[in-house]
Image (cartoon, rainbow, N blue to C red; front, side, top):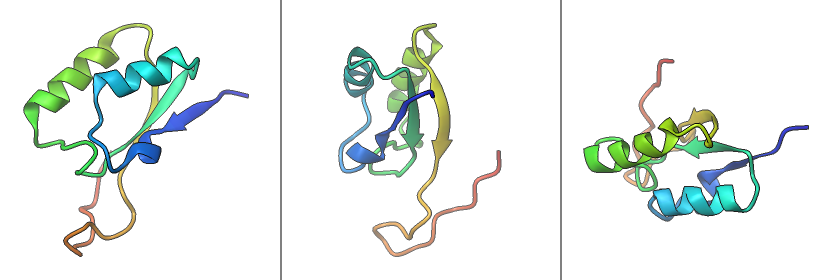
Length: 83
């Protein structure tokens, strides 16, 4: 069985390379990125670039990215995602 960790556990904190490194150092081989905007602000080019660089390395593995399925803090429904 393959194990993975969802960053949903840290949804109220900004997703950083430091957090991903700590997950990796704990021996967890794969990570699911939870794409809530308060966690991963996909409009923040600096955050996206930093995380992108981390995932380019051969040591890291992202099994999937998921978006929130509940309304956002503003009460608006999440935008539809096309994969």
